[in-house]
Length: 170
Ligand SMILES: Cc1cc2nc3c(=O)[nH]c(=O)nc-3n(C[C@H](O)[C@H](O)[C@H](O)COP(=O)(O)O)c2cc1C
Image (cartoon, rainbow, N blue to C red; front, side):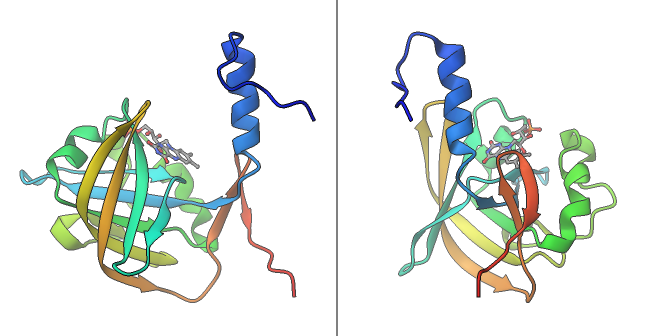
């Protein structure tokens, strides 16, 4: 295995290799959402959600600078993360629709600050936004967890562009 210099001049080759290396990292999949003070809701599918601190409970996720959801997150003071369960795989095509139609027909309820929460999610984290920091082509949303819940049953897994089931070895 030859290491690739991440600052390599051949940017296309490097970017492809970099994405493939990141594809070795299994994650879950979540829908993160917010509502602006004027009542507009937005949300998107993410796999960048991660825990930061246990005490106090803090989490983060990253938002691409080109996301059409950005103005709503910029105006909001809270966000909600709905971690998808394995049996919510059929929701993926809905949650990837254009922003205006993304939540049509999806069972949701309003969480902290009115952020839409997906019913029957594997876990939900309702957060107040602590900081938003620019990091390259993304913004990092650090949040303090105010409320959380979880359900029995496995979460949906994501690896190398594919969705699947977590198999825990005995
Ligand atoms: C599995 C998966 C994971 C994603 N993770 C992120 C993420 O962590 N951050 C992000 O900004 N976009 C992520 N996206 C892309 C967003 O879901 C969305 O399509 C993109 O940000 C465009 O958003 P917009 O429709 O709000 O403009 C991911 C998409 C998929 C399918």
